Image 1 (spheres, one colour):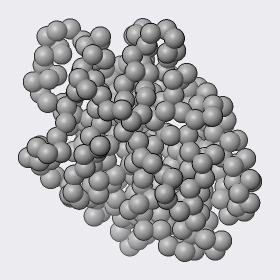
Image 2 (cartoon, rainbow, N blue to C red; image 1 turned 90 degrees about the vertical axis):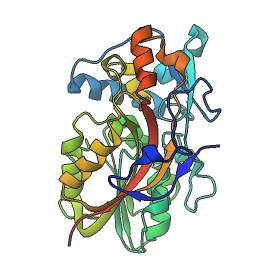
Image 3 (tube, helix red, strand yellow; image 1 turned 135 degrees about the vertical axis):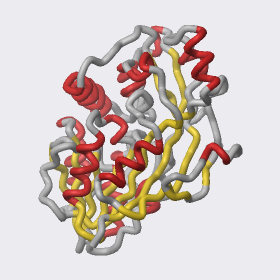
Image 4 (cartoon, rainbow, N blue to C red; image 1 turned 120 degrees about the vertical axis):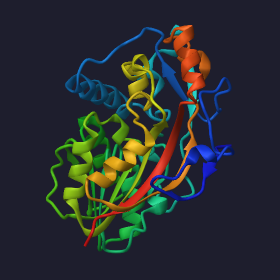
Length: 313
């Protein structure tokens, strides 16, 4: 069962909460399977990262269901003896507005839980995939509201539009675009959603600046994402498979929250925090004994968090 921390504002010393603290573990949780190739792949630049993410998530869009932030065909071939590690995802089945065909298992939280969406509002979902959070949001805004999903992967946009058509939603639309340069006018959204996507964006500062731009004054966001406490070794940060698996692209939690505030948002709070286990046997494949010992000594931890904040009026 996943461990969770209570609501806390920016700057809270989570390291003083031992019941919630987790580091790399030898006993991965039996929740979601992620597969990482034994062959080490490294990334060279932001363009390469984007193309890699676009390609792999395009493959996921054509599958029946992925596994967490990455599917088996995305990150490796189980028959080839690749290592499987288990991460935390959320079960949407009990949430009103849930559409099974749109749930590809790509999230690391339920941002709609803390979004406070009201009837008639305009909601924008970043990295909307097949439309899972968009359709939950549509249930909340009703026929009077509007929901816009943004995704940079053409197969995902096609799948989401097909799902919206099946559900007969004429106020849910999906636009092809990147989060750092969204095809959305400024001051559009009452509420911004995103679920396990921003860790995949190379230029996070620009992404948060764009989120601020399209949010209405007085509007707010609810974002679920992956962060770390401490610093991942460069070898792990450069692994393509760990990037697709939502780990290598994660940044330090305090840096993440400070980046959100620097974009102009206020009342930034962590509403939920859940342990995100990466097994020792996986990490040991890529680090020397000395590097691995240092990683353990520094208590580097990976977390799923849901963060909320608002744009000043």
